[in-house]
Length: 564
RNA sequence: GCGCCUGUAGCUCAGGGGAUAGAGCAUCGGACUUCUAAUCCGAGUGUCGCAGGUUCGAUUCCUGCCAGGCGCGCCA
Image 1 (tube, rainbow, N blue to C red):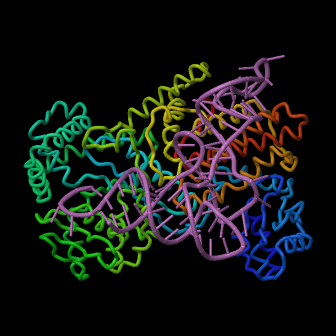
Image 2 (image 1 turned 90 degrees about the horizontal axis):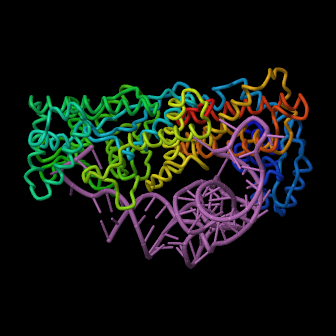
Image 3 (image 1 turned 90 degrees about the vertical axis):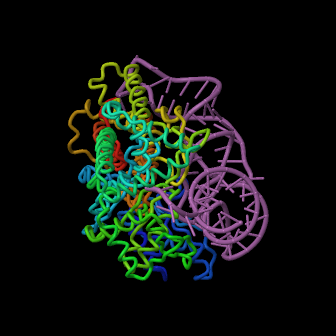
């Protein structure tokens, strides 16, 4: 649809004292298809031209020649409505999709540039809960969306493999740990220890003290601390990788917090050299009062470092290594202040790239009773959620398509897709209330709905004979045009998702496309089309829909089975 | 107390400053000898939290208030 916008901008720019960009920015989509494909509102011109908007609209509409692009250009009240030439729109769109295939929707905006995406970052020694799913699937999707925009992407899993929680774990493990349990179910056992630590620490405050001391020992390279830490880390990471493979998520780097240990002293020195460090109550801080923020703590009284120190160090290291033009932190909205502080410190240190760092926040997952808490042990395990979704998908397949081969694979694709889509389909900033019945609902606005539409198309295409020599310009019926118009809008949808860092833009688009396809499917026979030309053209159309559904799902990290 | 975010149908949510505010779920009623009924068609509800402001025009932008969530030095 972009070429149509450009064409309108070109035509109007000749008649108006406006730049093409200004005109293009004003263009909108009419609320009803009968009102055309694109519209230009004339309200603002009224002031410039000192004439009523409706008069301007009808004058301009009469003076414009639609050429190949537009069949009609009509004024309706204060709007100029543009009706695309249906034959040409169908022809250009369907051909573009079928020619570009998996590249349709891709753009070259980011050629030669790198985007670093920091996402997932689970804490070692804590189970992978549904809370971590959000960062993982949103980050994974942004990775794919930015790749489609032509950027080179670097996905970094900034593992929470350092910090005071290891002091707690070491204390707990030394008191109540069990080597056999650790070997059998490492994350489960570590989780139990973590929960028990917090329960007991409620009336034994010296436990917290011991934990801080053990973390300090760890930072100072104590042998026993180091050995336990390494064991916890390895075992946990192995489990995380298993979950990532179920989700189909990959990273270019697993350099977590611990990776920066040896560089932290240097980072602190850099901050000191910049004249930003300040002693406060025994700790080292960067004062941010002039920014209206609380100070950023870089070193505790006992000399141990903090999260902010390691994030600061990591940011500098990553810029040196990747020379990114953008770095995205896909981290919960509850850490917004932390990132504002981090970016402010980078700015004060004089790094010009500080403004290229972006916190991409998302809302929390909540439960009816309270916020999910690792410490209290009220975590819902992601693996349980995935498992139940897969089981339900398998059961549904047995009911609806008992002859399907490789049911396990399809059940996994559908079940996992449903869970991922649930996290991606709404604006990421909103909190999500976790409800089993919603997660396990495969009807309506869900991934299975989109996947099902895709599978239906595949089914028709399998039964179709050769449709070479199709003529897409025959696709002028309302139902066909509604689908085509959406196909034409896919590239700009991807661009908008990238701009706003919102995979939900793509997810919503796919729901619209699937819905429009289903309407078409129920009203227009493909294989039994009234004549051969129409049949071939409709086959080409649904092949194009199939392609865009696959491309879009891929941007969300969701697979599209050919049968289900 | 201060800061950030959210507030749209019974529920969950879409809505790129514009033309009569839309989906899904749930409820009720239809459509499978016809390309997979995980689908489609039909039926109904809205002080777009409240009050001002900017604008030709505000659900959308600004301010204040109310409600909920989150955050505010040695956790991450």
